[in-house]
Structures are given as structure tokens and as C-alpha cells.
Image 1 (cartoon, rainbow over the protein chains, first blue to last red):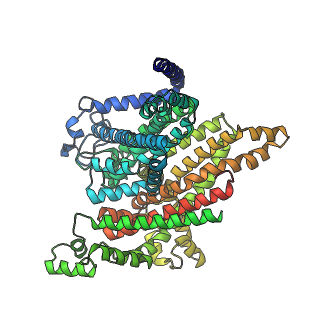
Image 2: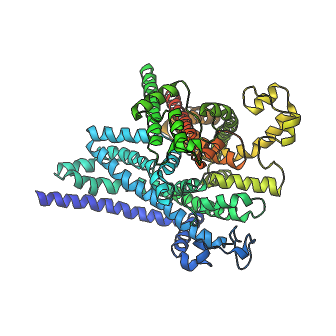
Length: 299
Length: 336
């Protein structure tokens, strides 16, 4: 009996694998659109350049914060492609090093939020009863506070810094994933394949991880992609007011802050990192939107 | 419905109590000595002791909590460590100034968002739709501080169309001072017939309002567009069309009404977004409102002012959410 059940299970899993193959086909179609392709290129280039910062930045030392006072406030030129800032540091190198902090910070927030939020949602959705009530009430409670303000307060209380900014933003970020997954699990539970698996005698954890999780991953991944841009902006918002990355390191938000006093004369100091942020965020947003459309995710 | 209203009201009160309790215990668990901060640097120990007594911080925590809640109910939020004035008085003075910005920004964002969203859905697939889609993607991807600085750079420095910052020209503050009636400068100048000041304030308010409204405008336009497209493909629209109802009525009466409901859910979030954006916009445009005050409190670690600001923003956010919830139920009978 058990062997038979296993073969049914394998069939069910093959069906859902085929399903995912169809999705891959749809993804290929996605890349045929010029604009989504372009945003994918921007994403990949940004990540590569940021990862390889010591080699891609023209002046790695200055990117890390070394001052270069004899070349202060230079406009863009052939040596300093994007000009230099108040301390004479090459803006291009600064922006490349800033990408590490901004983009990887955003990615860390989204990834950790999903890591916390998804299991809680799975647990609450599958068990219902007390754990569902406790978890969904907690989600409601946390989401009824304005997240960025909470993050600001936490950063002020426990000391500002990059890690603290990420931790503080996480507090208001994970409940979105729990809420999403909870809804998805509750609707997946009524599906025939879950009932069938339960009837075949599989355990709770097995069903959660092998049947439900693969089927609800698509909306989660789309949400993660769509959250990357906002997460990058959120870190920038904290850094801009001095509650994120601390100098001499700089993410894009802090760089805009540093350039703000010179906006009327040496405008590139604030505009370059701000524009970098804009381009990367819009690339993530466009790609996420296109993916959502192709995969037909309703949120 | 009555029961629902009652439930929402009770949970709102509960949330506000939780919020104020959290704010209290967070600020009391601070690493620094608030009394020392209050009295300033180089204070003698006995002076700090006196300041502690004055702030009521020598009592046990639970007694302090009781006093804090009692005062809060009466609208007393303590004394700001930075301005040395009651926080509630500071806030009362600043709120109308920010209200002015937020009011215009939300008004234009909501009406413009509905307009652009409907237009995009109307011409679905055409270049108009594409343009609006692009614009809204760009709008939600622009960090607010970058947008504000960019507007200053372009419209003040390069084109010279709008003033750089402030609420009005400084010489007008002497020749045509604003009488303080409601605190909202455009209303005050209009009531007192102070037209030069009215025009001047109107001229100064443009850039801050534009930087505040771009993001929400993009969000609303995109939501209206997608929810309208979704609604228009429903069966009941097909049925209505089959029974010979004209396209215009179909679109604006049956379509739009149903499409607005999901948009209402994000209004609470938008209010929070705009409130937070005022921190940055008022700072960059030197607009003397509550956002500027909040950011100054954050940057100078003014804990009592920060407590007041947190309570205010949190309360506004929660109240906005409750109201949208109630309105949504009134508008959309499908929600249970």
C-alpha cells in the first residue's frame, strides 16, 4: 500500500515539475521583450560590478573612503568620470562601493523577511487553531504601525549602523510574507492534491514541504523581487538621516545626503548616487512586474 | 454594521494604548541619561538630580507610566529636550503647516491618479497606456530625497521658475506678514485678504507639493489601471454589455465603482508614506512643518519630541486605516 502511495506521490510531483517547466518556457518569452531584457541586464551588471568592486572601481581606496583632498569637487572629467565629492573621492568608485551596501542590504532585508515570514505563514496556515490566531494577530498588530518610523526609532534606541538598519526594517517587513503565505496555504489546503496526499497517509511536514511549499513559491518569489526596490529605498531613507550606514562607508542614501549641501553648485555629488538608486530600483520593479504578469500572480 | 464599527473603534483604542505603552517603555529603556540630555552638557550631579525630579524620573517605572498615561490623555506629551517647550504645543503649531502640503499632495495625487489610471485603462495597449505605465513605474522608483533635490536643481537652479526653499520670501514677511488664524498659511492669507503673501506662498508651495505627490500619484494610477482592467474583464460587465448598456455607463458606473474598492485599502499606507515623505521634503525645502520638526528631533536625539512625533504619526496612520476600512465596507457590500 505504501509503495503504491509513493508512486502516486511521485506522479503528483512530476505533474507539478512539468508545471514548472511550462513556467520556464514563459520566462523565456519574458526576455524577448526589450525592456524586461534591459532591466535584467541592469540588474546583472549592477550585481556583478558591485561584487567585483575592488576590480571594477577605478579608485578602490577612495571607494572605501580614503580622502583625496587635492582634487576636491571636480566636475566629471576623463580621470574622474562622474566627478569627485567634498573629500575629492571619485564618485564612480563611491557609487560602485555604495551599490554593495545598498543593493546587498536590500537583498538581505527581502531574503531574511521571507526566511522569517514564510515558515510562520506555513505553520499558521497548516495548523490553524491557536497558532493561526496568534500569528495572524501578531501580523495585524505589526502591520498597524508605520514600518519606516518604527525602524527609525529602533535605530535611534539601539545605535545606528548598517546591521541595525536592516534588523530594524525587518521588524516591519516579515509580516507581509506571513500574510501572503497564510492566504496561499489556506486556499491550497482545500485543493484536491493536498487532500489526496493526506489520504495517502503522508505526514504534516511532508505535505507542507513537498506539496504546498513548491506550489506557493511563485507568489513569494514575485513578491521578493518586487520588494527589492522598496527595500533599497528604505535603507536609503534611513541612511539619509544618519541612521543607516556610517561614514566613511557610504550607501547611496548617505551619499545623496552628503551631496545635498552642494546641490546648487556641484550637483553631481547628490544626483549621481540618487540616479543610480533610481535606475536600479526601476529595473527591479519593471522586471518584477513583468514576471508577475507572465506568471499570472494575483496579489 | 453597528457591531463592526464598535469592534473597529475598540481595536483602534486598543492599538493606540499599545502604541503609547511601547513608546513609553522604549524611551525608558534608553542607554543614555535623559535627565542629563535635558539639562545639557557640563551639568553638576545635583543639577541632573534636580532635572530628574522635575521630569518625574526619580519615581518607580510603573508610577511613571501611570503619570505618563494620565498626562497623555490630557494631551500633555512632556517637554522637548531640544526646544524646551511642551511637545504638544510645538506639534500644534507645526501640524497646520504640514497639513497644507499633505492636503494638496493627496488631493492632486488621488484625483490625478484616478484620472491617469482610467485614461490608461481606456486606451489599454496604446501609446497613452504605455506612457502612463512608464511614468508610474518611474514615480514609484524615485527616492523622495532624490526627487526633491532634483526638482530644486532643475526648477530653481537651471530654469529659475520656482523659489529654492522656505514658505515665503523674507522681505514679504516684513511687508505682508501672515496673520495666524488657522495656522494654514494659504487659508490665513486668503481670509485676511493678504493677496501678495497668498500668491507668494502659493509659488513656494509648488515644488514641495510636487515632490510629495509624485510617488502616490504613480501608485494610485497603476492600481486603478490594473483593477479597472480586471473588473472590465468580469462576467457581469459582459452581461451588462450584452444587455445594451452604453460603453460610457459601463466604464464609469459599473467599472470604476468596483475598481475603486481595492484602491481604498492602500489609502492608509499612502497616508503613512506621505507623512514620512514630509520629513524629507520639509527638510530639503526648509518648510517649517512637523516633518522638519520630526527630523530635527531624530537628528538631535530629542527623545520626548520623538515620542510625540511617533505617537502622532502612528495615530494618524491607525486612524486612516480604520476610516478606510469602514469606508470600504460601506462602499463595497461584498466584503464580509
